[in-house]
Image (tube, rainbow, N blue to C red):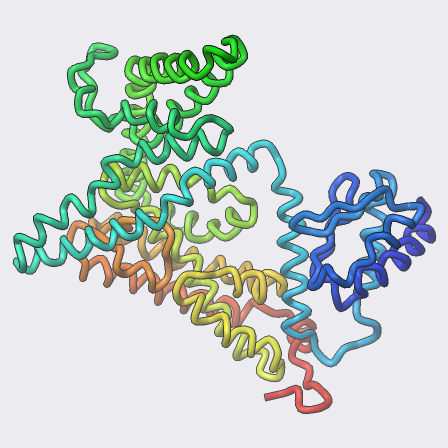
Length: 477
């Protein structure tokens, strides 16, 4: 369509979706205009569908208007122009930043719908439900370790051992169950095949010239075994008559899935898991500074791209193998950079009451490791501060990395929390206090580097003047 036609369609759509005030985000895919709306009750769906250019509407996580591949990009661009505030404003507000951040998030969802990223998302769906148990068991393990180091309550320490370790000893079963559930198989069959990996009797089985070890292959093996079980179940169900399905399909799935786990997957996955552990240990011992710098600095962009989900099985493997993951404390420094950056933004935009109020409300969550309010509400929409926050994360990661290189590696006994919330889960070769000192030093380094980088490089003169304009009526603090 011509640009004039695109403008006319955008102008026709805008009032039918509740006007500019009702739109929180605008994005498009190949054929659909995707709108994040504050109140869907304000949408006149019938009137929208009556427009000649509208091919249909879909209600999902966003409100989607089907326009076709020839029109959607042009209409989206015209609608964005209509949403731009007319004339010079006194100062962009927190609502403006939130809307911009939501648009970036929505566009990221569309871009992340690639086969690789969808596969990573499915892997995350397998492991994320396990995080509460990992956190609980990790804290109990930390408590047990603290009591043991102090020499207190030996009977309680003995009892806390199975409480903290029971879940980890059977985590392969839960991974198998969730894998089959995620990929469309029968969950309990996925768990049954994966349970072979942790059964004590596998020590009597020999594969590739070696006796197997219970738990060999860990979560990697459980993931592979359950995926195989899903495919075996589907294949068998297609071939077996319905009258025999209830007997034959589970038997074939468990029999051949279990044998494949014993005589192939456990050994191969064990080699992969061992390599992951050796690689993480070597990385910190020999390249701690560079590893911390890169991981701490790039974690937020990885989150933006959806690639961070690939780290979840790695974290879980390290916890299962070594009792803690040395990667998480480094990655947590990205949040420290965000906090330091937000404080600098707060002080630099001293006349922008709206953005300062947003930072005040989001900062406590940021200190506890919940970074989304600061990322999508402040730093990412502002542009440069997102980069300077990453600089802070890189500095904090480098601090943790250097400590690991010097023999003071810090790990986390669970995944999920970061920021100050990670302190109860810390573990290291020299005890909790030494680990807390190293991790706290990393946080302070991240705060300071993020603050200084943002203070000196976070704004151009033009953007600082734009966002720092004094509101005409009581807009300043």
